[in-house]
Amino acid sequence: MAGVWFDEMEVGQVFQHAIRRTVTETDNVMFTCMTHNPAYLHLDEEYMKGTPYGQRLVNSCFTLSLMVGISVNETTLGTAVANLGWDEVRFPAPVFHGDTIRVETEVLELRESKSRPDQGIVTFQHRAYNQRDELVASCKRAGLQLKKPKE
Image (cartoon, rainbow, N blue to C red; front, top):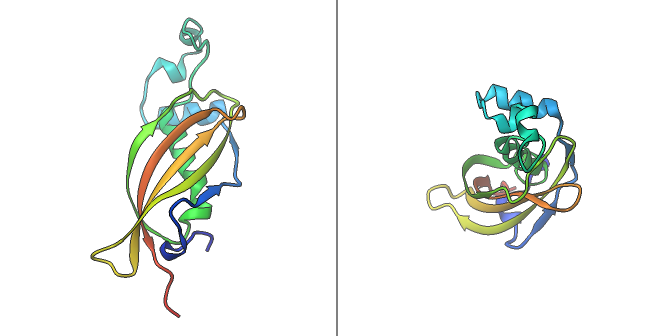
């Protein structure tokens, strides 16, 4: 198990996730098509040449999913009960094909579960950066997390 138990986390703890991922055109087109999103922003290179970006943008829902997915191994793998929600999702800079994304996660809040004594609620702040260290995505995520089993 790679994840961290609820009672082993501390507010202010920051995880620098080891996995980095270069986003490909295939990632963007497949995700966009699988989610039935016909936006020109993601699929029409000729249209995008006439925009300030000059090229297609990676689907922001893919960026969000990638950011959270990269965080799982060091934080919630094997210790998560449920994802409770995402708040304050932001995309301050675009992601393009060929960008390499790295992620860090900070523990913002820890709260004991009132109804589940063996679990707690964690609020994470995820931040994704491109290869130029520009913040490209962030979100707060609340999750229900297991406590370390009593031995």
